[in-house]
Length: 88
Figure 1 (tube, rainbow, N blue to C red):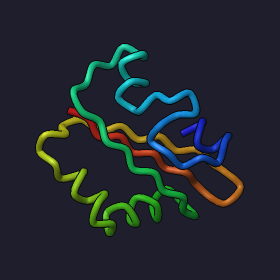
Figure 2: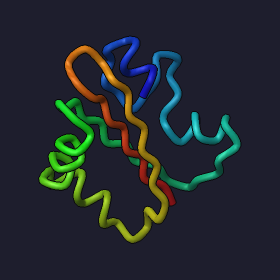
Figure 3: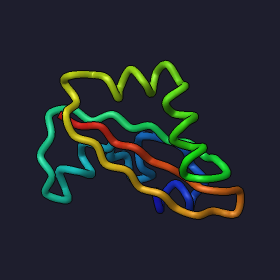
């Protein structure tokens, strides 16, 4: 979330080319799959509500193969940046 906030770059791949699964692995979190959803909204609540209304995000939330979730929020000038990560 901090990298997105600092760079303004909305991408599942970091500037040094690592995807979210590789970054989790480097942090010692072992996963076989990882999906990320990023949203910018006026508040955390409105951001999460927007995610639940998004078909692709809702599909990831309901994917039975993705059993764990992590959420990060960062206050930015335009509101709140939410990053939700779903892993197996």
